[in-house]
Length: 305
Ligand SMILES: Nc1ncnc2c1ncn2[C@@H]1O[C@H](COP(=O)(O)OP(=O)(O)OP(=O)(O)O)[C@@H](O)[C@H]1O
Ligand SMILES: [Mg+2]
Image (cartoon, rainbow, N blue to C red; front, side, top):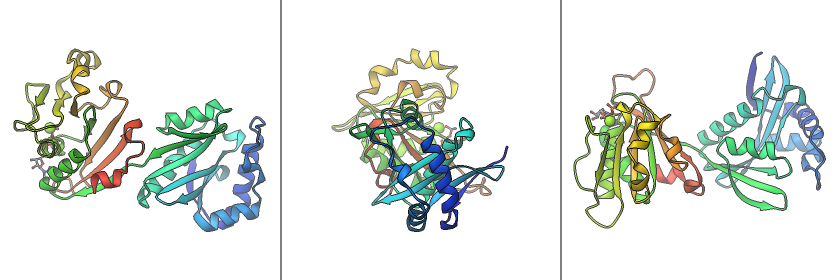
């Protein structure tokens, strides 16, 4: 099975219309009925011409589609449809992931979607993908997900400056989960966080210490710097008893991916990478993703810019 997602053009209107019609007619009857069933080939073509959409094919067979509907800084995903015979193959996930990447690369802040409360599996699908409930109009739920942002960080000083900027919007209880290879620049970013928060002590790679608390020099939260590199597993994370400190501090965790997510439903994931082909150079790219309600309404673009 070869699954492909691509941008749909106005020429795809008839195909997209068929996918939408088959997907939405196979759903349980809703009251009021899904407006998707009112779409015509013309109305789909108009939407594709105005703002585009995506088409997913499986071995060249149209299997799923969605329409993009920009609204200021945000994009609505409309008519998210999977052909009934192509269900349970990850087609909706592939479409949504593609849409998120596209929207992020075009500089949008968030994606939104309407899901009907009568279809709990659908609501769960969105929530599992990190969408958060924002409002409800009758049984029509609006779910939103803020989009990740990527920034180029040419030098170590720029990495510290990024840490300072992140500190400016940090609140007590915030958790930053830093990922990236050895020497990627995680500790360097934490040094900037420490500067920005105005905390005591020099931030270094804690070789023997797993967690170090930097007390505030002025009003504001402490910084807890955790290096989970030597932690054996989730049980040892629990032994650190971070829970108590988390609420009053800003916590930055290196090497915690796969270990500490359970401690922090709300977190900023900061992924540092070296651009491909420049492994020896100084350049880094940093991708910041928000997880949980803490940053639901935040504009990550402003956070890092
Ligand atoms: N653009 C950059 N951003 C961050 N650090 C950079 C950059 N360019 C060069 N560096 C250098 O790379 C090194 C990064 O080391 P750092 O200790 O911050 O990495 P780390 O990700 O914490 O590593 P570890 O996995 O060992 O904890 C530093 O020596 C820093 O000066
Ligand atoms: Mg480090």
